[in-house]
Amino acid sequence: METPPPHTESTVPTDADIAAFKEQLGRPPRGLRSIAHRCPCGLPDVVETAPRLPDGTPFPTLYYLTCPRAASAIGTLEANGVMKEMTERLATDPELAAAYRAAHEDYIARRDEIDVLQGFPSAGGMPDRVKCLHVLVGHSLAAGPGVNPLGDEAIAMLPEWWRKGPCVSPCAPAEA
Image (cartoon, rainbow, N blue to C red; front, side, top):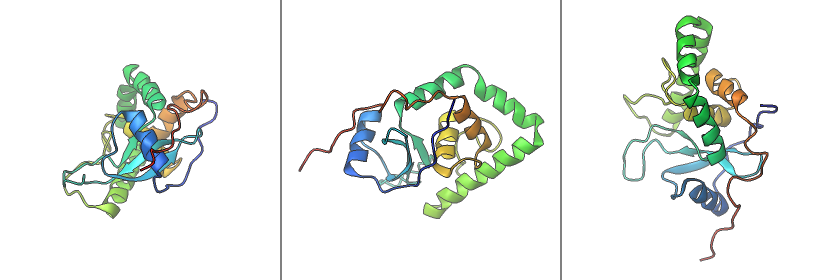
């Protein structure tokens, strides 16, 4: 990647953000709390979700990647064995393992500030393995650089997914 996407502050979702989410994922959001990161194209690319869905079901994935272009590029990394290589490095690099454990603790602390999910893991395989790069990238984008070392590494491997413009047509919500 030539230039990583800039860090953006979390914002309250607008009706246009919710419409974009629906177009990105083909379904309405569940437990949506905020737009945790905004793509350089202007659309949401990571949302923060409630640790419990409205019906009370635990949903431990705090940061959910919504951009289909970014998700596709991450899927390519996963298919190319990046997760296995990262997991192997965790077993042999104590500094990386400590930084990844700190990322896990950061993730849990952010989730617990909203609602404590006793006995639920963080996400993405943290702290001992890499199970889902989508979650790690979402965490890195939402929290900012330096919080999740493997999420940051994955971002550095991605193409600039926003360069072709918005992943979906920016749309105004239907008027009531």
